[in-house]
Length: 298
Image 1 (cartoon, helix red, strand yellow):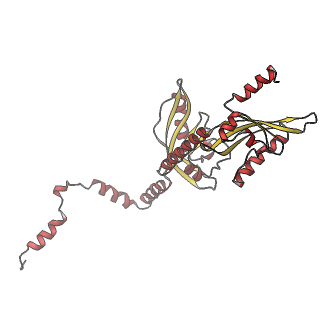
Image 2: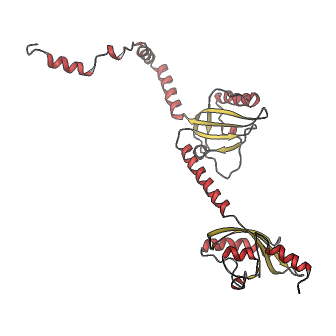
């Protein structure tokens, strides 16, 4: 006969919505609760002695096996996700497992509780897809986005900007000023950022000169806004545009004006030349009309 305590524990296990199992060290089922039977669509008798995590993907099986080795060494616990075929289709369960030890600290069995997280995984995939689509849209334009803290630590750098600067994805957070050259224009740009952080107000765009990891000098036009919370700047969000080639052209023209004085005069005369309305300009068809309307002796 079952005592009151046994009945209490049985009800506690059988009335759970979570899946509860007990397996031997070889990975075969010793006990399953009703929720597990309902999830996989099999009876307790059919499940007795079967493999706890039957999988078809060799790579997936290796990942699970690696994680479950933690059950045989301190802290004798692990969490693992398992995709299994159920009457409702493929479902994903998150398992939290703990080893039962004897007096010699040898594993005699393993107890685990699982929860269906299929909906969560689907939502995560949907969010990831949207993030990828958004990133594709962002990366398709000229603008490259970033955020940094009030102490100038980079929080987000768009992949294209990261590639230009030579940032490694896993090298950790860096201060964006590490990439600045000693060009005097950078002091003015840094001053605007500091003033924006203090005032919580947007500053006009400015230019910066940076040096990539491989030594290339890059020029950027910077647009930033402060993100304010409780009247305090909590971060800076902005985008940069690569104007390196544009600046090279500007500098080349300026140098040419110094070396060739007539170029400056030519540019000013072109700028001063009056531009007549279209109605006062000779249309291309006018030439052909006059040509064909001439008399033979003309």
